[in-house]
Figure 1 (cartoon, rainbow, N blue to C red):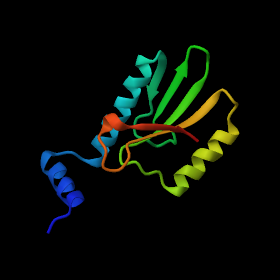
Figure 2 (tube, one colour):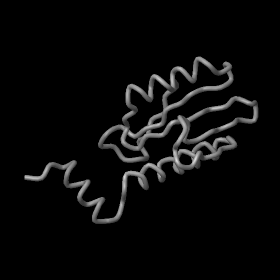
Figure 3 (cartoon, rainbow, N blue to C red):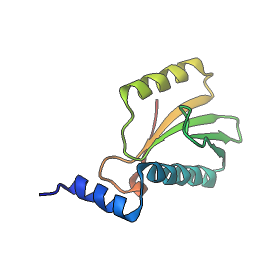
Length: 113
């Protein structure tokens, strides 16, 4: 008997969706949401940094956003994000954007580290 998670993974593979593509779509989703709220936004392509999206408001406040489509930041990632937040001035905020497990993208959540 196939579990629901295994079934969804199989269907996604058959449709040609990879985790990388789903994650990239989520990053663009967050990018668009921030742009609609008067943020200047940049996507860090390739995800070789802690922040997937960088967002600057007109008042200079800057968000460094780590996006996770699967809703899970590893303990190591969270430790690095917290370390980054401590090293930055107050007008910089490290944010995690994620979709809780089993939820649709429209039900995303954003939390400050």
